[in-house]
Length: 407
Ligand SMILES: Cc1cc2nc3c(=O)[nH]c(=O)nc-3n(C[C@H](O)[C@H](O)[C@H](O)COP(=O)(O)OP(=O)(O)OC[C@H]3O[C@@H](n4cnc5c(N)ncnc54)[C@H](O)[C@@H]3O)c2cc1C
Image (cartoon, rainbow, N blue to C red; front, side):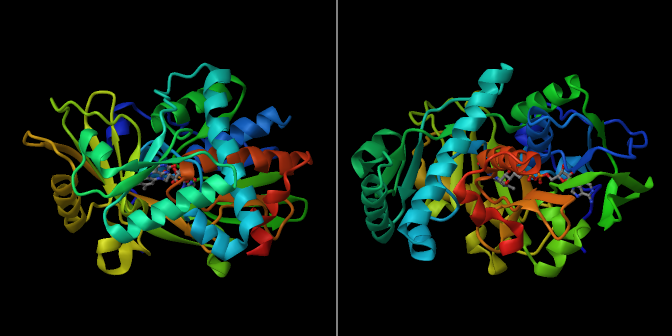
């Protein structure tokens, strides 16, 4: 086991401190417990309260490891798969329904920010998906046509325009105007603060080792507080789910994998591109921060094993070098770049390619987990769906793809 809770390098987003829970014994005896306080955990607590649940607790462990503080701030339409891959895997109608759902949940993030009046640096400025070779350029053109034929707006940007935007060695791109970006720590803290103001009991440094149904309640085995009892539990620990949920471990529903990001010091460079962008089928993804830093992640596909199967968040120096070289190759920046931050985080590769949302073997043990590179919107939107499932509200037909029991 390479999970070392005490070891971590901070991310750029962690310049804003995470709100942490109390260090006392969590209250128990009833109510609903949410395990995990990343985007999925706080969103579950938020939507559950909105759905009418008022006895809510949340716990976490090794909080600084959460992927929520270690991502690139993209809020993207779609899933980790391209539309072509989705159609090939699930058929055209299912792919269209899932894409539409993904748009709805991106808008859910925007609407929550508005409703709660959060300062989360949210900008709906679109997303540029760039091709770094001819084959990818062809795929991008096909993708634009396919998405367009399904009624999803997006358009082609040619190489000359990309050069004007300050890129090099790129062939063309797909631009999609609805995607967005935000500060993940500010968003998570804002939603969490709303929950705390409305009575959420939140405790940190509670390590869950098992979650089991016992009679008419759920027992959560913890260190250091022993066995805690609740009426129902939501397991929202994403890549860490298999370490505390037998259901996830036995079925191998998710596999941890490490993503990595580097971030420069503020640059003098006049970035013409101000929206999230990616290259090479999304394997490299980047953002220009409000204080004019270049944040870029990815490159794991160039490593042996692809960084799969690890909980170690020590940055891999080969990836760091790969990312620096990638910037040199693809950005026309005429100044020496000093890199200030380098960090890694653990995401969950899901067995089905989708998150798992709903009850597991027990009707009292629920999950909201299985998020990869699109987790910002998916975690928030999935939590809303979970709250509707738990409250017995009507749910969209598309939910069947996320049913943990069908995996
Ligand atoms: C490098 C990188 C770049 C990314 N870029 C993007 C991006 O640009 N856009 C995007 O949409 N997504 C991106 N993602 C993915 C996104 O960050 C995740 O999908 C999302 O944050 C998952 O949120 P979560 O709450 O499910 O999990 P996490 O944020 O990982 O939270 C897990 C929670 O479980 C708790 N926990 C773990 N073990 C235990 C235990 N034993 N007991 C109790 N609690 C426990 C932790 O304390 C934590 O609170 C990126 C991820 C990485 C790593």
